[in-house]
Length: 220
Ligand code: AMP
Image: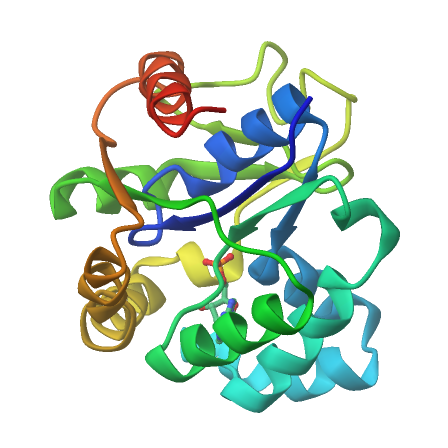
């Protein structure tokens, strides 16, 4: 299979995590979810985790420098040689500029940016019901995509939990941060001719087919 290097863009709850995991399995490439890496670090109380916790809990962005160092280190690992999907990075224009430099230095290029467009009402509903497996990270929704056994992951049997920052108080802050700091990246990448827009409203399966269509359009 050929290498695929993608960015997934869209608001929290757009389906980046679910579709990113799908693309990862389909192409056997690495999925880098910066949110997942930070949550794990916070749980382990590592130096990165301690630094990140104060931002995560408030739905604010962790400083660019911390994030750029983290992703630079991650992209250099062996498992990214066959390609990668970035989910949750970049989130600011400064991060996007750094990523461009990083990729150029590695002698690589991005294949595209999949932008998931989803109405805000849908995003709020999805975040409120989102449940994540503690062990393998598989995503469920309490109403739209419930696990077969209550609170247990279909894939690995792990326990499901609700992310602290998916609580109503924090969701508003995260959506504001998205609109002001991350949404400008849509035009940033449009100007580079890299954006494929995907209608992100619908079931995970319907959207998966749209993703496959978009990847075909990119020649992948
Ligand atoms: P996510 O799982 O992508 O929704 O990210 C959860 C949280 O992790 C965000 O609300 C931020 O606090 C932090 N985070 C994840 N990725 C980034 C990033 N690229 N830049 C800054 N903060 C980030």
